[in-house]
Image (cartoon, rainbow, N blue to C red; front, side):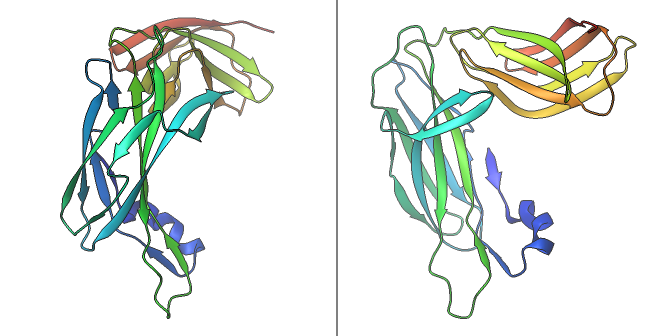
Length: 238
């Protein structure tokens, strides 16, 4: 379940002045997979706040260029209802389905974004108002047997040591934890999050900017959807 709560923004308050933070809601499940045999999915949206909220949904094509996400509006997938009101503590089922055609042998990637629609501000409020949103990944494949194929490498750049991953497969690759250990066995870096590499794309992570990394054989420990992987990668001297 993904939940956006107002306490996530508390660290920003000192530099924002007068701030009004809207309600909180959750969406479950946290990602959607559609196939020709299962072309519709249901998402449960729950208002976990104490006030009613209005939510609208945007459907976006999700691509990547130079390691960055690129999102553009699309009608290839549909979400229904596209806008709705949710009382405090209430739930709403949202159905997401494929409208466009399937691409044979290649996964298509989208995002469904739930955005809060703020009510009109009161006449006596003059500060900043913050609306919350949740972005859900949607993966579409004609059949559910497509695989990812990630190649990893280490590169010393002028900015520091980089971990690079390229997905040569036909489906997305997701890492939730990446650890890098030096030739001496010391942990150099640990990264945690939802690190997606879409089919045919690459991502990089700059992990050491203080000093030039020591050449030698490093170990990468990676946690993915399919389990834990340990790889040895050589950093060449230059």
